[in-house]
Length: 391
Image (spheres, rainbow, N blue to C red):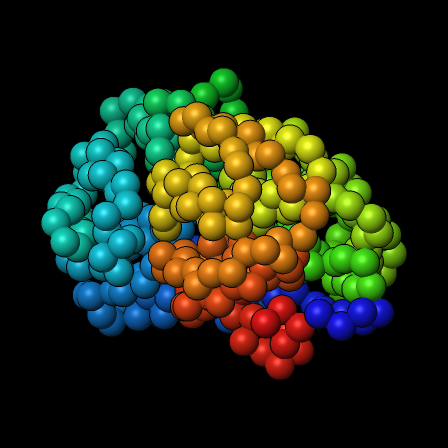
């Protein structure tokens, strides 16, 4: 990394919001979406939705939101569908779709793929129950597909509140789109005949990607991220708070400018609402001065990899000690860069682990990431020449 460089970047739109917008657009074709994302998850969902009227076999790639959102979208349209993805995606928790199908009157069978046979949704006799024990995406998927129903529906969240912040983002987004949702405790009531009330929506930048880029700011390197709003519906916008606590300087104007002088500071953070920030934040904590305590990590085992376990391996390779429990870790920061670490690192096909390894490299580790391709899942800009400073 050369000293006294300034990097100016515009982050692509949020893949999380884009995928939610694409489902809405499938019910309201006149909706104009402002913003273009090259994230693989978004591309797979776009392709699946475009082919819904013609094909019976759909590939969702590696995307959990793609698979879960599209499966419920396909279930609204009469037909027989085979929905698939990578082996890793199909090994992630997907059984809740089968439970939902039994309550909404269509057939769903999970083998190596998901087979749907449906005549559309049938009015349930009472509230349908959707588990949040392993992901909130199933409940989000149901709500996103409540457009144009000819009956009222009540959905009850059961089995915990994992990733509830992303569910709340879904609800806030749908209300912005004009859907009426009544919330009472863990129940969500959607009246019949909901139609999209907006004709145009602009997708804000992806905040988890913004965190990855912002974390490169260091003495002699200022990072500018263009068009970042000062508020966001994305839970990962919490990265602003975490960076400030760690000693970064953040200046909001027409863009967000991030700089840092001196050592990183240890942090205490509960990541239950923004677990995707964990891999990058953990590496920053490893170079910080003092002990950092990161909690709320129970959902990490259900991601593209078991991210807590994978980060523990990376920390060991970096020479950093830690103490971990099921959903928490204490990282004993070195208080200095990782100059003594020399390693080849395989990120286990997980885009967030690629990000973590690249932050470690920026912080002095002599690290060779053996496979950076997974980062295209959420951050394809990594391969653009303008992002050469990252590599």
